[in-house]
Image (cartoon, rainbow, N blue to C red; front, side):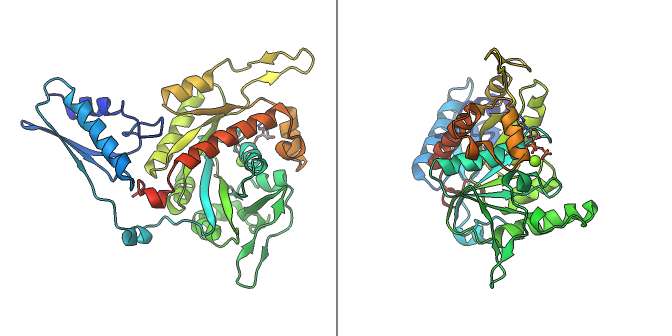
Amino acid sequence: MPSPNEILSELRKIKYPGFSRDIVSFGLIKDIEVAHAGVTVFLAPVSANPDVVRTVIEEVRRTVAAMPGVPGVQVEVEAAQPRAAAAHSARRPIPGVRHVLAVASGKGGVGKSTVAVNLALAMHALGQRVGLMDADVYGPSVAMMMGVEEAARVNPQRRIIPPQRYGVRYVSMALFVDDQTPVIWRGPMVTKLETEFLFNVEWGELDCLVLDLPPGTGDAQLTITQRVELVGGVIVTTPQEVALLDVKRGVAMFNEVRTPVLGVIENMSYYVCRKCGHRHEIFGHGGGARMAAELNLALLGELPIAPELRAGGDNARPLVAVSPQHPASLEFKAIAGRILERMARLPRPIEAEIIQ
Ligand SMILES: Nc1ncnc2c1ncn2[C@@H]1O[C@H](COP(=O)(O)OP(=O)(O)OP(=O)(O)O)[C@@H](O)[C@H]1O
Ligand SMILES: [Mg+2]
């Protein structure tokens, strides 16, 4: 008879229907009991879609039954929490916002904000109604990149009206925390206020709200991801081999809050020499692809090192908006397309209830 661990490794081979992620990393396996009579696998609520539930149960049964020495298999699925109970859970959808997408990175300085800004603009270019929320109060870089300087306005209902730039509605805690606020206060303010803050913005109707999480995978990031109903997360990384660990942390964070990772975006992948046109892969080739394969994640795209991307950020002239035909802008739009496709395939968390 195999051990629960051996069974778990076999179960890792089963993909969640429609995803490249396996059911174990999705957090579906609650327990495995091995007894004389056979094996019982206990699953967390799988989905509100009965076809998905049936497929997963069948796959689990087939996979475990095929292991040597297993006399019988039973699969038990925990009932999904009723909707009323789910409503009491800490996670809430943002009214009017169809999908909230979190952009994360295991560490700072990998270009997460640059990616969040240009990704939001690329989604807008593809016809989506998009909002952008800068959840990083320590580095108000997104406001600078978007060219938003003025404090946000508040309507008579005391709801925040987000300024709009290049067709994207944008808001940041940084627009409310003035420069005089000591940094030491910012951390607690973030965790306490940020999530409430998100729900107090008059977003209007949005297809997608892009959330630029603070760099790293600590408490502040977890708090946000625990309070807001996310459709998924993307992880921004750089191609070095050492980045694998950071990406793993990002994946672990999203796993902890049962949020699917839609994929990895590799930034600063290569540099195209202006003189010779040659593509230089400064950190070596294929790091992102190898990492994605190792972690069973999709590689959503590879962005070049482009001085225009940096300059666009510094001058509040984001590349995708001002040079839509630049190769990096085209790659952003390709990435946006892939993300939209993946989001469309995902049921909204409240509908799916894979979250609870
Ligand atoms: N692909 C790129 N090509 C050239 N410069 C880039 C690229 N991506 C990011 N940069 C530059 O690198 C710097 C860091 O980028 P950014 O602020 O987006 O990173 P971040 O991960 O959000 O950092 P932080 O951890 O400080 O929030 C910025 O000056 C930005 O303009
Ligand atoms: Mg940033």
